[in-house]
Image 1 (tube, rainbow, N blue to C red):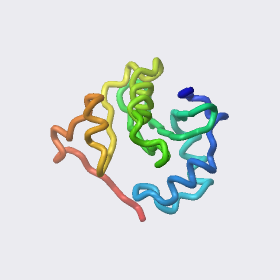
Image 2: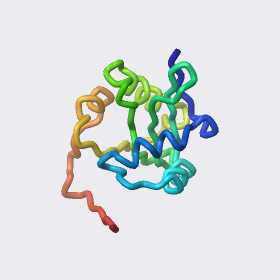
Image 3: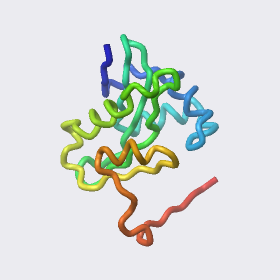
Length: 133
C-alpha cells in the first residue's frame, strides 16, 4: 500500500541522505545538511508498505512562492507512477493551495513536471542567481 505523509518524524533521514549524496544536484550533501533542509521545508515522504521509497520538499512562504526540490523515487521503484503520485499530492496539499508561483529546476524530468502545469520560464532574462561554492 502506498502512503504519502508530511510527518517529518516518519522520514528516514539516512535513506534520504544516502540517495542525495550521489545525485548530481546534491552531491556531497551531509546528513547534517539534509536534516537542516528538512527542518526548513515542507517535506513529503512516499512509503510502500511503511518503507520510504521517495522524498520531495518545498520551500515556501505559503502565499506567493514555492520552490520544489529534492524530488526522487528510489531506482528500484521507478516507472510505476510513484513520482506522479508524490507531486500530485504536493500540488493538492491544503497548506499550499494559495501559492501563486511555483518553480523548480530539472535537467531530465521536464515530461513529469509538465503534467502538473510547469513550463519553461516565460522571461528567463528576469531571473538571477548567486551561487556560492
